[in-house]
Image (cartoon, rainbow, N blue to C red; front, side, top):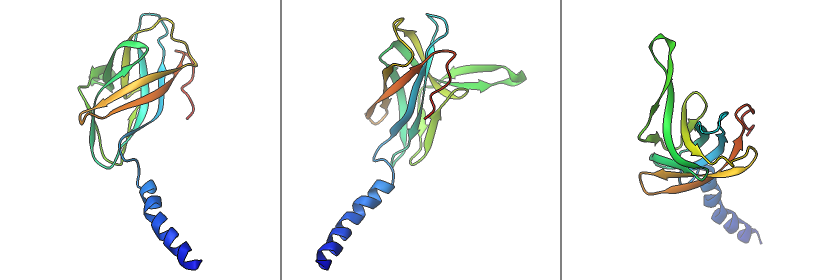
Length: 150
């Protein structure tokens, strides 16, 4: 009986260690969408990318409630003026979190379906340079509502 237990424990140990080493590929956590305050204006999507075992590059994002989506980054320029610039891609370093959050990187969502409602789940599709595609559910929140508490 004791030998059986030792063999089973030894066989399970690599699986347990693998589970502790992080995702096998990039993972998407805490995705949410800020709906626009005024119909016809853009909204924004936010999430955290958890880097996999090797570096990755996010090349674009789409959303099922928007006709067009662009990756952007907010920044403060000379004189304290804030603005945004589009990003062609975003590096996702291995085993590192890459945040898309208000005031930083985010995805601008243009031409949002006017029937989109706060409290509903919509889908984001994230495409990577290596051909990987990740689908992530994202909670929609109203323009004046607080961000979800993950």
